[in-house]
Structure formats: C-alpha cells, structure tokens
Length: 291
Image (cartoon, rainbow, N blue to C red; front, side, top):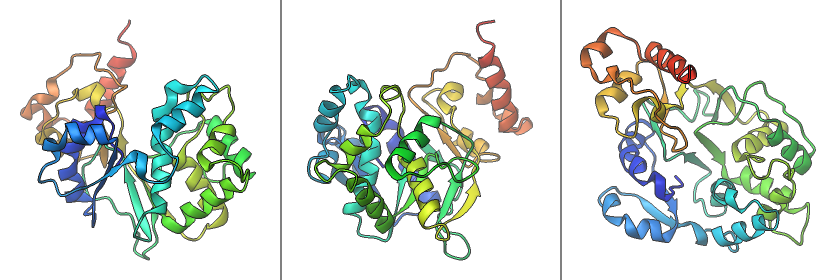
C-alpha cells in the first residue's frame, strides 16, 4: 500500500477493512520516511511493516524520477509515475509468489477474492480506455490492447516472477538506462504531463499476451466518487449501506464535494433507498450543478 502524505488518514481507517475483507498475511506500507516519522503514532498497534520508498531498489528515488522528468518539463507528475514504479519495484524484494497492491484511498466493503475456485489469480476488469497507455505499451513491447475492458482498478495481484520478467524486457530496450527511465522515454511527450503510463494496464496486457492461461477474470463494482458524495468523513454505518451494492469505495483527493446533499446521513433514508440509486441521483445533480 503506497501511502502519500495526503492519504495517511484514509489509509489508517482503511487498514481495518483491508484486514477484515482481504485477510492479508502481511501489510506493507510504502512511503517517504518523513511521512512515516511524522505519523508514527497514527500507525501504532496497527501491525504493519514500513518500507522507505527511496530504498526499495537502487536509484529508484523520488529525487531521481523528479530530476529525469524535469528534463522533459514534466516534473509536476513525479508522484503519479513514481508510485507506479514503486509497485513494480516491490517485485524485487517480495518474499512471496504473489503480492497485492491496494490503493490507500480505497476501502473494501466486502470480501475480495484474489484467486478463483481453480486457484488461479484473478484480474478485476473495469470499463476504461486511455489510448496513451496503449501507445506506451506498444512502444515498449510491440503489443496492442488485447482484452475487452480495462485492467485499471484500485488493486491488482501481481505475480512476482512475471513482474520481474516484464521489467527485464523493458531493461533490454536500452541496457545503458534504468527501466523506469526507459518507461518515461517511451511515453509520448504530448501526454507525459498528464497520464501516459499505467502499471496496471501494462502488466495486465503483458500477462494476457505472454501468460494468457495464468489468470482468470471477474468484474468488480466500485464507487470512485466517494469523496465527492460523502466528503472526507464517512462512518461505518454508511460503509455498510454502500456494501449492499458496491464492492469498494474510493476517496480520491482530486475529487471535490460540490453539491451539499447530506440526506444519506439519515438512517431512515438508508433503509428506504438503495445506495446505487442515491449515487446515481447525486451524480446527476453534480453533472448539472452549474445549471
């Protein structure tokens, strides 16, 4: 679980739900040492391991990624790309065959299966498409989109060996450069300042191309606009209500609560109205808020 400064409070609340519905053998928080130091008391007694993000593998540091992106005048996107590289780099120190990346701002609302009945790892597919991601994938591997749907989700289970294999293929593109620099090189400079690479889309597309029979697929019902609708403070009762329809809910910091509709705080309302109906109604208000 990569955790930035802005995600600390959400991550702390999230950990109880992660334990309850994912049941991990171990939880590893990856963050900057200063973030961990300042917030040490918040994580007390939570039984998690900490990793300094700048010490996972040699040369992969925030400073390095920032400096390299600055050569393309895209240093403002350092955090976006850096946290993706960290999830990939964990494969070099993972002690297990598989590891799960889970977004700190996403709360599981019910049990999430990472293996199917045949003990195959499971990709959670969603509906999203960013052409720039596939341009980068094609540039790196010469492969195109090969699955209907998107691998972009708030979590993913990685096969440690395959992730290292994929990184090695990237490294082979230029033996004189670090693999994370090679990824940046292969992102079109027209989109580098926005979103030109997805570790989830890249890994999923790679696996389906070269290890097609390893994984199975499932759909997941996630609510990404949790912060827009409920704000930063959401209690357990509302999360239980949301679980009637949704598998996960995210509280992304870029999202802003613009419509002050708080009827969901009423327990009577929650008994009468399904959460998805309320979410759809709220999003309709949000869409037409300026009108």
